[in-house]
Every structure is written in structure tokens, then in C-alpha cells.
Image (cartoon, rainbow, N blue to C red; front, top):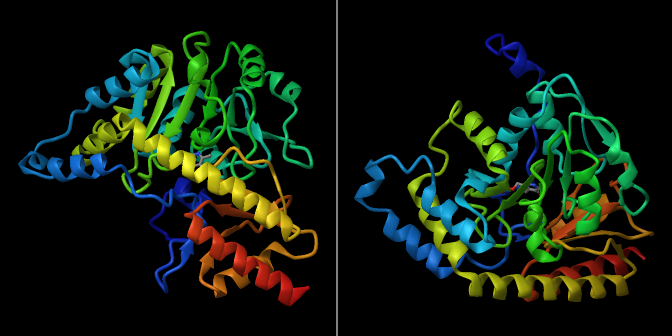
Length: 355
Ligand code: PMP
């Protein structure tokens, strides 16, 4: 705590991101990055964007990228917003659509950035209970509130709701905004983007960090009624009107247009996930059925913290959350087939030694 900090800075409990250690080379299965490189077309586009034009400001409207995203989804450019990762879009959406007067709702086990944003903007929130397998009760989301945030698939649980369930939530909340955070949707679930034309209270947020292998570029996108997009622009233009830089605009555009590469890498990640889920089940692990690029798994006989530490000692980094409800689980990002084979072998050794 510093005497120079504002009251606000002193009151914050910031988000703690997953480790990005530099002490040795790990098999890195802890922050849900894609194990495959970005589309070669995206790399090439970034290379050619790194020219004299960098002296010029980028397009503050991100028009070309928004048009390409709109085309892919059969929407209009006015229904699309882009930002520096979906984290930034969420950071704009909270003050754009939620207010200090009424609590917003989200599940008790979910992405830990939501309460951080809420506190930062002075927005009260209520967390709604999930059951033993982290399922939600749709009725809970029908109560009066200031808005709803639904991660789908949820993180870190990997569980996904179907579109009928989302429609129930949207219809129960006609007067307030429902944000559906689809960071992991390309690995299994059905996207709510198809509902954007019918529900003016729906904002869908997606990212290029996971299924497009571009976590390092920081690009997220949102889909919604033009009124909601305008709301996001009002916040953005009051904060930093140049959200995406020229390299990010070029790389994201090429990545969005390379559908074949996206499909191939996504298919590989899903196939590896299914294979890994089976292999760890044979070792006695129970994992939640995953629609994401990670597994959320527990072993009845071993502490997750012990497994995390032992794996780390063997050069394999996974995510362990020292938090109530989920402290018996490991979240394991899906790597390449070779990486997951090494992970399963290391886990088998640890289970053998400890058993
Ligand atoms: N939402 C969820 C549920 C996430 O897990 C993440 C990744 N940590 C994000 C949003 C943010 O992703 P990004 O800012 O890289 O787009």
C-alpha cells in the first residue's frame, strides 16, 4: 500500500493470471493457450503490416476486421465490436450495461475476472450456486437483477449450456443485458451468436486467444444489437479510442479469414481432449464432460495440490485453484498429442508412487 495510491487503487483485489514462468521450459497446460501456432496467413499478414505505416494511427473503427467478422456470421458490421482481448470487452461492457443500483448475477464457480470488474466499477453482484457437478439452475437466473453474465462453456468447469437454456435466460431478462462469454465455444458448444438478431438484450463475447491461437495478439470480439455495440463504443471512446493496433488488426483479419486452418487445429484439440479424458479416467480421475480446450478433473484419492506440485516438479504445468468448492480439481489445458502423452505418463507415475 502506498501513500500515493487513490482510495480506489487501495481498495482493489486484482485478478491473478495463471503462471507464465521463466525458470525452465515447461509443458505448459495451465492457461488454456492453443498448442498449435497461429495460421501462417496471420503471421504473414502481421509481418507485412510491420512497415512504414506503423507511424500512422490505426483505424479507430476497426472497420475491415469488423466487416470480416460480420461476413463470417451473416451479420452487419454495426453488430460487431472488437477489443484488446475479450477481457477488455468485458471491462467495457460492465460499465456500459450494469449499474451500482442493482446486483448482477453470475455462477459461484466461474471466471474470476467477473467479480474483479464488478468491484472496480462499484457494481454489486450475487453469485448463484452451482450443483455438485457445477451445473446451474436456470430458475435462479429469472429473478430481478441488474443483468446476467453467463460464461458458456464455463471456466474453469468446462460445462456448456444448450441454446434452449440460454433462450430461457434471455427471455427472463428482457429488460437487462445478458452477456454470454464464449471464450471456449469453438471447442464444443453451440454459439449464441445465432440469437443476436432475435434478442436485443444479448451480448456475445468471443476471443481469438484460444481457437485462433492468438493469445499473444490480444483480440476479442463481441456480437450484439447495434444499440449494445454503440454502448460499448461510448465507453471505448471515453477510454482509448484506438483499441487495436495495426499488427493486431492485420493478424486478426487474416486469422478470421483462414477458416480451413481454424477447423483443422480445433478438430485436433477436440480429438486430443477426448483421448486424454479417456486415458486419465483409466487412472481413476473423474472429469467434467468438457466442451472447452481443457479438462477439469479430480481424483478421489489424491489432493489436487499434491498432483499440481508433483507435475510441476516433472516440468508439466497445470492449473490448481486454492479455492473452496474447486480445490480438489486440476484444470488441464489440451496440448499436442505428444504433450498429453507425457502428461498422462507423468500422472500415471505419480499415482503409482503415491498409491
Ligand atoms: N473469458 C473467459 C471465461 C476466459 O477464460 C478468458 C481467458 N482467460 C477470457 C474471457 C479472456 O480471454 P482474452 O482476454 O484472452 O480474450
